Amino acid sequence: MLIQSPHDPGFVQNPYAVYDRARVDGPVLFWKDYGMLAAFDHATVHGLLRDKRLSRAVPDTQRKPVPDHLKAFHAVERHSLLELKPPEHTRLRRLVLHAFTSRRIAGLARDINAICAELLAALPVGDFDLIPTFCAQVPVRVIARLLGVPETMGADLLRWSSAMVAMYQAGRTRAIEDAANTAAVEFTDFLSSYIETRRNDPRDDLITELIAAEAEGQTLALDEMIGTCVLLLNAGHEATVHSLGNAVKCLLETGTAQALGPDTIDGTVEELLRFTPPLHMFTRYAYEEVQIGGHVLRPGEEIALMLGAAGRDPAVFADPHRFDPKRKKPAHLAFGGGLHFCVGAPLARLEMQIALPALFAHAPQLRIGRAPRFADSYHFHKLEQLKVAI
Image (cartoon, rainbow, N blue to C red; front, side, top):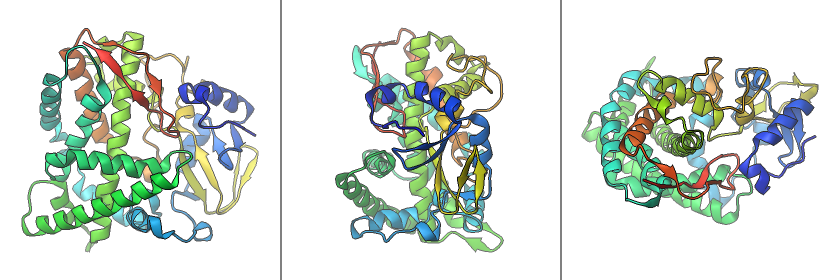
C-alpha cells in the first residue's frame, strides 16, 4: 500500500523519489489517498494503456447523478474523445482525424514561427515570469489559429481552459466546480454560435474541416464538434504550456540549451517529455477482471497509470534521473497510448520544436532569476511561475 498525499510539499516538488520506492515495493500498489490501484513501472503502464479490457469511459455501474451545478461541464465531457469507448470512440476519432490531418499540422509551422517571433520581440528586459508572457501564449494563439477563431479571444480561451482543467486536480472544491461549469457554459455558447457562422461562411480552419468531416456516411453532431474543440483547447493548451515551462527550467538547470540545434531538436524534445512531463497520472476503468501485479482489478474499478513514473523506470531507461538529450529509444509514454493516444501529439511536438530554439536564439544569455517551484496541482506537474532574466 502507498500512503502519500498528492499535496505534500516534498512530493509536489519531487514526486520521483516516491515513484522509485513504489516501483520497488510494487510496482502495482493500492494508493490509499486516491482509493485505487496505481501502476508505477513502464511495462505495466505501457501494457495497460493498450489493454482493451480497460477504458477511460466511466462504466454504467459507476455513474453517479450529475449535480445541477455541473450539468454544463458534464454535457461537454460526455462528447469528449477522452471519455468514450468503442464503438463511439472509434467513430468520433476517425472523423476528427479526417480534419486534424498531418498536412494541417505541418502547415501551422509558419504560424508558430510568426507567433514566437512576435512574442519574443515583446518580452520585457530584466526579470519576468516566462509562463504567462511566452509559454502560455504560444499554444493558445496556435489553437486559435487552428480552430479559426479570432486571436483576440485568447484571454477568454485561457480563462475557460484553466477553469475546466482545474477539475482534474487533486482536492477540487465547490468553487473550482462552479468556475468550471461557468466556463463550459460560456465556451459552449461561443462555439455554438461560431460553428453556425462557419457553416454559412467556410474558411481554411479546423472548425470548417470538422463540419465537413465525413467517414462512411457519418458526420459530427454539434455536441461532438463542441466537445472536440474544447478537448483540443484544454488538453492541447494546458499540456503544452507546462511542457514548455518544464523544458526551459530543465535546459537552464542542466546547461543543455545547445541540444536545441536543427539536427538534435527532435531527440531533445522527446527526452524533455520523458524527463519532465506535465501529466503524471492517467486513469482507466476495468470492464473485465484483470490480474495485474499480484492484484485483482475488478470490473468497475479504476486504476492510475503513472506516466511520470514510467518515464523514470531504470528497467527501461539507463540512469533515468539524468537528462540526456542524446538518449535513444525506447519511446516515452507522456502522450499516453493505445486508443487514447493523444491526438494532438504532433502539434505539441511541433510547438516545442519551434518555440524552444526560438527562445534560446532570442535570449542566449537567458538565466533563472528565482528558484522555480512546482504548483500544488497534482496530477499535473507544472511550475507556479518561471522567473527568468535576459
